[in-house]
Length: 250
Image 1: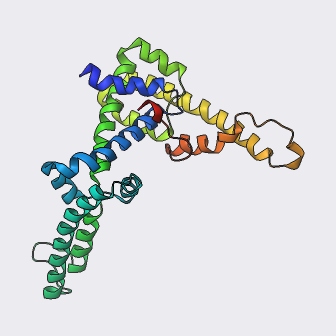
Image 2: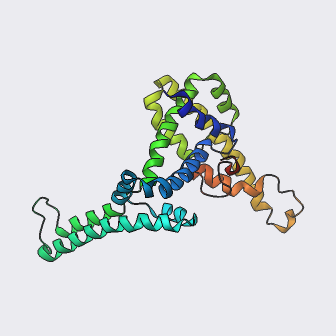
Image 3: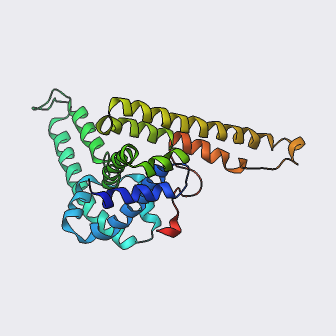
C-alpha cells in the first residue's frame, strides 16, 4: 500500500469535520477532475482520445461550462462530436440499407441494434469513471486505516460517520479488505453512527417545521436551519447546501 499517496487524502477528509468525509473527498476529486479535463485532456493526445471515445455526462458538462474555460471545452467537443457523427452516419446507412431486417450477426432487430448503439453513445463519462476509480481506492484505504490505525479508529469513533450511500459502498468494499468478524464490527459502528446522526437530523427537522407555526416564532432556531440539507445529504449523499469540503483550503 502506498502509505502517503493513499492515506493522506482520507486523513484530510476526516479532519474536515463535515457530515460525511467521503462525500467531501468525492466532491474534491470531482472538482480536480474537471480542472484536469479542461487542462491536460485538451493538450495530451491520449487523454483526448479517451474523451472522444467515452464522452462526458450532462452534469459534468455543466460543471465544465461553469468554469468559463470555453476554448478548452469547445476543443474537446470539436473532436468528440466527430466520432459521434461518424457513428450516426453509419447507423443511418445501416437503417437505409436494411430497415426492419434482423442483423446478420445478432438476433436483435435492426431497431434494437440502432437503439442499443445510440444508448451507448451517451452512457459513459470519462470524469465519472475517473472519480469511481479514485473513490474505490479511497474506500479501500478508509477500511485499511480503520483496521490497522488506532488514531484513525479513534477519529472515526469521534466523528459523524458517513452518509447512507457511503455506508453501502464501504460495506461492499469491506468484503475485499476485512475479515467477516471485522465486517460485522464495522457495519455495527457505521450503522450506529448513521442512525444517531439521522435521529439528530430528524429532531432538528421537526423543530424547523414547528418554527413556521406563528405560535412558535419566539423559539430559537438552534441547529434546525440546516436540518433539511443534512437529512437529504445523509440519505442520498451530498447534493444540497454548502460544499462538503473546505474550498479555501484547496
